[in-house]
Length: 151
Image 1: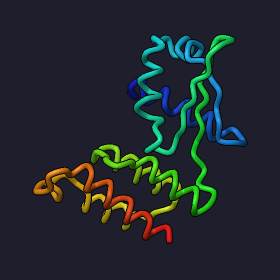
Image 2: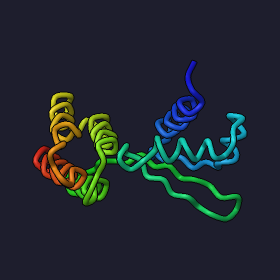
Image 3: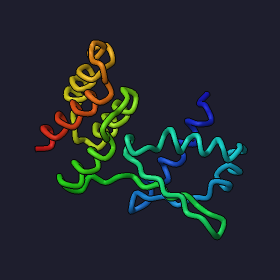
Image 4: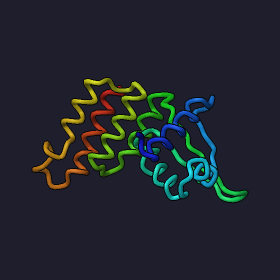
């Protein structure tokens, strides 16, 4: 049986994919009521499963009961893709967040399976174990590699 977090994630992804603009506006409390869980469970799913690295942008709106807007990132053109990826990586990135970003690029068919696996091996902690600031070096490697693949 699937965990509640997985069920909530699948539900949200299904709603996003059904929308024309790959965008979903929901109220956290209504979603919590639907799944008979605490709103904090919804927060957990949103903050761990719908991150920028995974190809989503979340906007929280206040007032009128408040709502959350979840937007699937569209990689429309070369320039916006590169800017979004550079912003996601920043100056430093963990291995876990790197993998989430790579999975997002793979799902969007920006990189293929072979490229995904090669980059994954190059940036893993074992490969970078002798490096002093591995998260910074990892970010530099990712930016350079992805920039090359997008060119």
